[in-house]
Image (tube, rainbow, N blue to C red; front, side, top):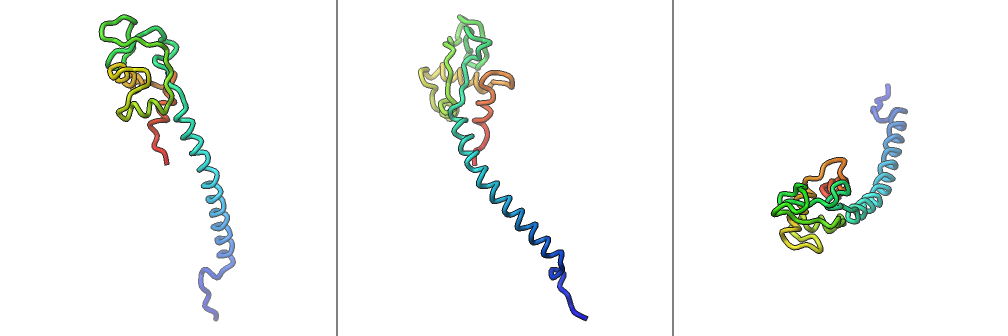
Length: 133
């Protein structure tokens, strides 16, 4: 009687082939995903966030980021300015939005933080919050 090792069976060859095929698929995935992540990262930095969105054009932004009627005391007028994702990312990290003073930039970034699904610029803002690999 011959002592057979469990891995010396015909099934071992099939299992090994499957493992090699999965490894090949995994390697192809890594190769194809990395450029996609790089492209996604670049598009996040160039996406745009209008302040305020077009549906509320002509409104002003309060210090807390809420949208208020133009001329409201303590609010900041808007010009329909559109900020790039990179500019917003810098402002959210303690920088300042271009073309604004400190208080206006803070009010605008508060507005951006309050964006909700369905609002113009929300997808861009949500993308900025995603960790990048």
